[in-house]
Image 1 (tube, helix red, strand yellow):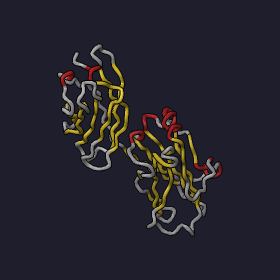
Image 2 (cartoon, one colour):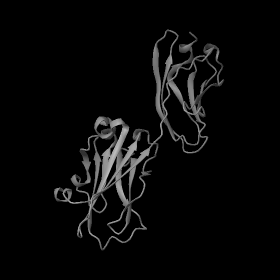
Image 3 (tube, one colour):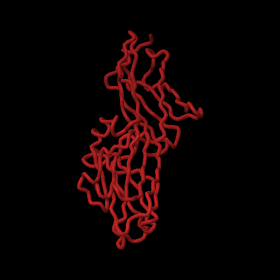
Image 4 (spheres, helix red, strand yellow):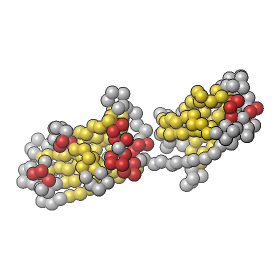
Length: 263
């Protein structure tokens, strides 16, 4: 679209911060705010982002959508282009290079490609998308720019949880640890640790119980410290919560209670 790049157009840039923490399920999407292009009959548009789609959620998809309430586009001919930008503004992926119909520009990229090449696609864990719209009938009078930002709120915590008298912990006796917001002091979630059978070699179980309705997803990296001082990573997982008050639990398959007696 070299010829279009020299013409005046409407440009909308959407930044999604902390995008790697997006909790949405397969084919669920998050949307940008609606934006209006006055010079094209006041049409309304928005961008949609699905972080898990196709083949069991292997792809990330971004596309442009017009509002059903907008005026008919049949009498106005125009072109649209959708891009993913680098931090310095370079185009990393473009619908124009994807042989995508200009009427509904769509970008699709493998999750592993997007999140592995983070320094390019997700600098500072931010996805930057750009849509440009050109009017073919007489052109636009001036360049118009609009920017929107969606922030997925993330709070990170790192702590040591010392369970006293662990060697004498009875099966199903729950040890609880409460995590509070560093900013407000409000309880965010509680962690439960317990043994799941009657023997001392019982597996260690770990449960997460969110206390805030705003928590949609959490990622945990749990390591256990042996009496010898050795550290073993036992759990690295993502928990999603579909309903308020819903809890999630995991069994630490490789951990036995006798290996982690009191130091």
